[in-house]
Image (cartoon, rainbow over all chains, first blue to last red; front, side, top):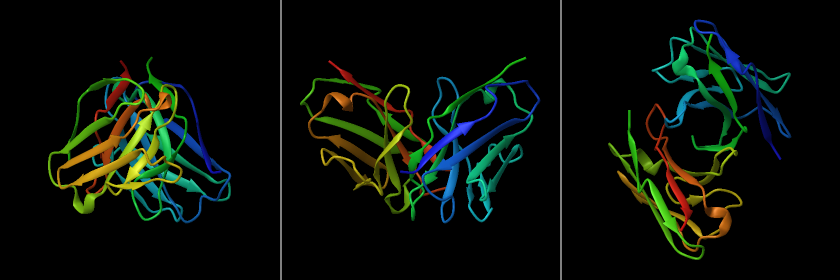
Length: 118
Length: 108
């Protein structure tokens, strides 16, 4: 079955760019929408943005100025870049897939902890 | 954005009992675009219900969702040991998608 796996640095310095990749295995990245979601410590889940396999994107307005999503269909991967990070960007980052025809998320990665600290 | 509130914060029950979880939205959720997720410690969230009442693939029929507008409910008819976890609601009828703070169902 389809599985998602996040990868990237667990520690990022303040003001630098957080970069994560989600690898899709067991299925194709094509024909789906793909999401990034995060959970800061002690806070609720927050949607970051989504990307279609075609490359079209939509971002959460609260993060829009700092977020870039991209997709590499040849590698079955999509990626997140979040610039100018602060301690408030610390948290567990998840990638997920949209259930077709909805914006509910039917498949999630295990999540990766990212800490912003000097 | 739509703010979701979940109650209670914690629900202490015994296996075999019925669990009723509430999710309330700050404004009407269009087309009942409301989902429920289960998250066990150290695991990713698992989609249980979408469209307020449709069970996701492989979800046992002891899980059911209901509601519309601003008030939604997740019911677990008879709690199994693996059901003790945290449950989140999510609305996807308006952008940005938002999540509730969660209800923890623990063993009494």
